[in-house]
Image (tube, rainbow, N blue to C red; front, side, top):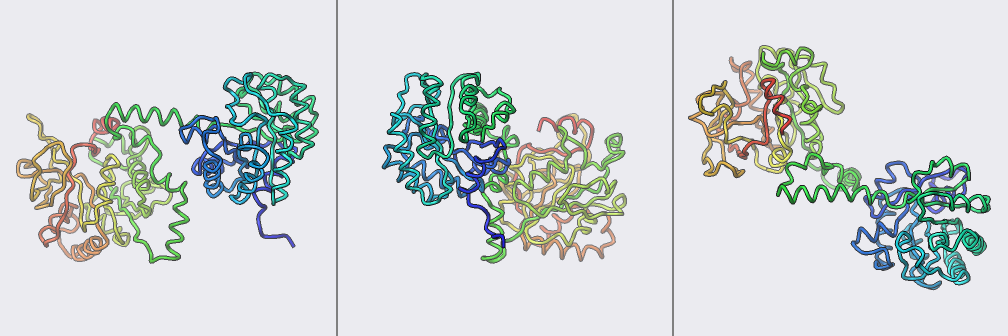
Length: 543
């Protein structure tokens, strides 16, 4: 009867090196990069000594101690299901240090270790290669034997790496050393080269004639088609430092731009959302465990009101789709809002559709249809999704575009009712005319026009007499669990009103204030827009 237990990492690494198929092993240098490599599908991970040292801000000259390397390797093994082959440099000392190192690696779940035949402390192979002394063959073979004798798991892999070509000692010496290391018990051989062409490596492979598994690290001769390695039955290719090197330009560019602009606002939406960081950290597993072992955590949801087609100025663009599906820089308003909410850990997303409702098909988005969208207002649309008003919930217009930090501020506030407002009412410039807007009267208008602030709502109306009001509501209302209960009760009572079909969201805000509820207002200057015309749509790209 077959066992239900999956093969151990050591067994999987040994099997990978023993197949006739060419496999690829990706560099990683911490738990996060190890998980990324494993998710990409690599069957094994190379814990690179160069990358680990660089991540610690030190040189690849054994400046990081073997205990520091061991600690990092343990995090990598915990984070990634793929077996890990550790770059063990020269074994961190003589045979005695190496056999202790092997036992410690096994205890941390590392599948194998590679050691190179240089003198401790080593120098990176791509620095002054011909000036690097090599260890005596007999001494290095003794180290390999000690490691094999020390391992407790028969499948633990020890790879011997010869630097004879790097040091300029030639093909004959590389072959002599590889054969000696094979005889000493090495499970595979790495022959390393610093040349941009693979000629000396291919000469080694041809002379070696597949007598024992060979692994290559083509950092310098990276343009060589891998089919050439496959034809010579190379066991595996290691991409030795590429995740680290890919990350460096991105971090440098971000740091320079943030320092220059003295702000992260311009770069935030080009970065990985925090939700992706949390995912890679395994937050889903913790969330499931919390549901199992702790009281149920409160859920956060959002209802997006997107039933309208939009005004006549937009009709050439909305002949086939509702306004919420208009695109800014190739992304629909709805998708951008949903993506930002998801990045902020709002998981239960609902939309109220009306005009061209069937066009809204985003996966994971619960849709409620307002069949009477043309004759009813925002409150009637919200009432269609009343069952989604559960727990903490954000109510948002479907035609707004705003920077993520505005949503973050509202979601982080635990008050029962929280709105976002712009102290600069659109259309108030001299000589301009603007239609009525959702306007707010505040209990304490802020003294400054440029600093974000918070205050309370004293009144709200859909009006055009801008002078009587302090700010414009931008279409975002965050409710606590108690707040959503109040809104549900208000909706149930409002259905009996003769003006129910005409009620707008500002009517809800005004009634909440009239009932004595505190509606907290966070004030912003810009960083949002709503789409009412083709010009608005064009200008939205600047956001």
